[in-house]
Length: 272
Image 1 (cartoon, rainbow, N blue to C red):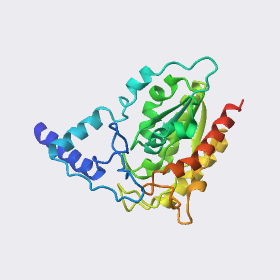
Image 2 (image 1 turned 120 degrees about the horizontal axis):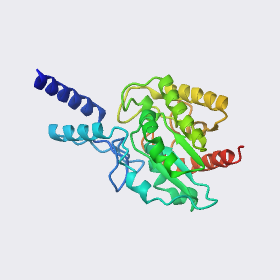
Image 3 (image 1 turned 45 degrees about the horizontal axis):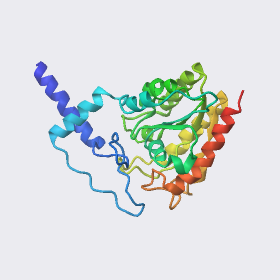
Image 4 (image 1 turned 90 degrees about the horizontal axis):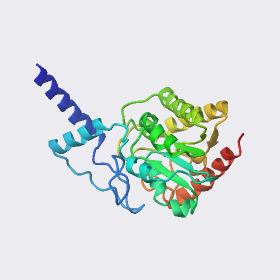
C-alpha cells in the first residue's frame, strides 16, 4: 500500500510539473529558476518547449520540492555582499523575473547606485515571503522595492486569490518595518495573456489587483509606484515595443519604469 501511494504521488507530481512547464526559463547566460521563455529579440517567436523525459521531470520536481522558495538561489551572492558602508543608502529590488531581468541592465538603469537585485524568475508572492529575511532583511537596505503579483495571477504555484496576495504583501511590510526598512510597492505591469499559461485572461485581474494593492498602500502609508499606467495600452496589455513577450519589459519598457522607481525610492527615503 505504501509503495502504491508513493507511486501515485510521483505520477501526480509528474503530471502537475509537466503542465506547469518546467522547461521555462528567464533570459540569462547563467542558470535561472523556472519561468517564461523570453525571446532574445522582441520580434522572434518563442522557442519550442523541449520534451522532458520522466526522469528529468522527476528530478526537476524533486529539486523544486527541496527548495520551494529557492533560498539557495542568492545564498552565495548574499554571503559575498559586503555590509553597507557608513551612510550608504542600499536599496533591494525584490520580485520575480521582471525584477531579475531588470537587474541584468542595472548599470544602464541606475549607474553606480548601491541597488541590489533580488528577483527570481517564476516566483509568487508566497515564495517571496519565505525568503524575505534572507534576501532583504539580512542585506540591511534602507529601502526595499517590491514588485510581485504577476505569477500569482499566472498560478505558478497554484491558484491564488487577491486576498492571499495581499496577505503576502502585509507579511513583507511587517518584516520590513520591524527591521527599519522602508517599503516601495510597484504596480503589476499589464499583460493580455501569459505565454506559459494561456487562457487565464489576466488583464482585468491585474487591473483589479493593482487597485487593491494601491488602496492598501495608501492606507498603510507605503509608497506606491504606478508602472501600470505608463506601460498599458487601451486593452490592458503592454504598449507596442515595451515588451519582449507581452509580460517582460524591453529595454524601452525598463527605461520608462526606472525614473518611476527612482522617484519612489527618493520619496521613501524622505519619509519620517
